[in-house]
Length: 396
Image 1: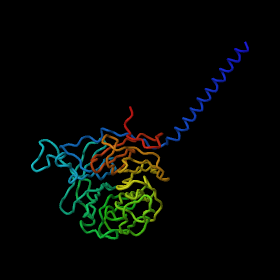
Image 2: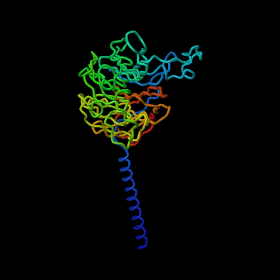
Image 3: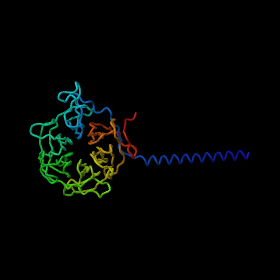
Image 4: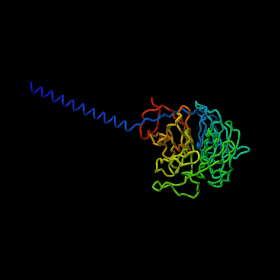
């Protein structure tokens, strides 16, 4: 009897210890999982958006993106110089080398919410100098369309109605006088128009090393500055060295200048792998370094904000590391990222521009051989991995 009692007691003790061990493993796994996830906006690629283009049209390097008040998505692409005549646009050669396909699409394209192409225009015309290399497109709060250019001679920006009627040119091709010129630009990358002040912030750019603020109606220069709010200096900085002290001037290209609702200007200093933040008068506030050891093209290509009034989150496109960073805007902390290099939906090849619509969906365009527009559907706030999520494919 005593032997049986001891046997049962020993078995019970072993079972208790095993349960405790399993409990400890469960708790440890739960803690580990909690440490590896974070609450952040979640996205899934929509592989069926946008719908195919008509007329055998194809895209070249797609280097500008904007979402208007109707949630229509606008892009600009390089329909000359980036499409291979032998393999992509046989109908455009002289004589045509193909019987049925294909042709370059017009440079400016407008898509509705469903992904239908509903507008297209652009190219050389009377009264203005079309950029030799398109770069950047912005639809402002008045439904005007702004376009820059990054060819070596592109020292101007253009303003049109949404239907493509020419309104204004500021600066002139071939006339750039450097980063302290107050009449011309130097290969503009992107434009943002502030509805509160009717001022346009110019990321200027691929030749110059500054942010310029102009009156959006007259085009008059109002102020400009370089990194840290310094007077711009065009002295060559040499190649970026991640181990060197931080550069006191922007490197080219200065690739974005976007204003938040609370009046902070976020500037993409792309080859320096950083975002600098300013007040609208050019006073420096702070900076953050992203993927510090990224060389060449750099890591900070474009930014967009979440659509809540506080713009709690910021999304940064990195066309070298082929991902989108999801950041907490106030702390500038990277919460997670998604994307990977590749040709499939949800992957990137030179992810160049990023924008959000009123529903919180993200849109991206790709340059170089990417030549694509993609949509990432907002799926709410929830737990996501802290590390890169890779391709955010739709869940069943």
